Length: 293
Ligand code: AMP
Image (cartoon, rainbow, N blue to C red):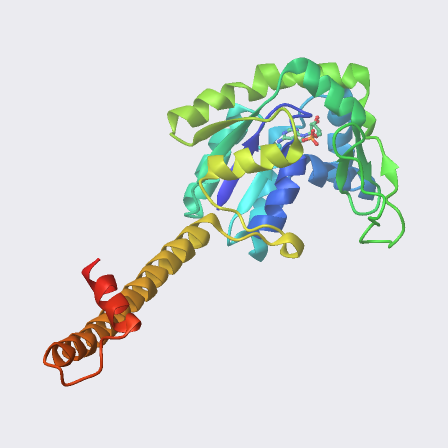
């Protein structure tokens, strides 16, 4: 599966992408995460990207596309990938189309996360991520469970707020989304790839809507593995026809038994009528009565 998750900052793309990684077994490619990692490592790319990121603007296309080309060269992307936060403008969308055409790996779907502006701002203000493992939480909607520890350190998650999640930068990022990224909705709709989901509300509910939009019953994470709806329906059909067959066999057996007990009783009746046998017993009459019914 090759998917793009499209949506404004705070629409929940990152959270749902992480869930898709667990369920579909394909990697998430978040350009925001790749850029933040480059900044943290202090590479040349990070140095060039930093100013735009701090100001809430888009990083230059050539830098982002270079990163994407490199990432798609890695073997874990052969079974598919989830783009989160990429493409971000029409130039990137056209470049991605050409790149995937050359790789003969066209996109399967683009899912747009629909959330209203006030909710986006509320969500961004509650967003925190673990400084060690990078997992994203939301203190308002999906705080880290108290029993959970960071898979990197084994200690509780070290929660940090992203430097660009401050009020002024968020306003600029939302403006940039409207101006540069929103036009991608029509771009992908024209290609027949667009699916829109209501991304407001409960996180699990959004995951369910996303799975439905992708038309794939996604495997639940191993711990809480749920039965596939397709397999469940097939199993139900098989078990209904098996129980019907069992019931049919039982009815046939009963009829045969009744017939043979009926004929024994009839013979008894005839013998009784001819005076060759003692009188008909209650059970014999009962059986004959039963048979007539
Ligand atoms: P995100 O984590 O997706 O919200 O991205 C954080 C910041 O990284 C953005 O505000 C941009 O400055 C930069 N960025 C991430 N993805 C892209 C992209 N595809 N094109 C340009 N800049 C990006």
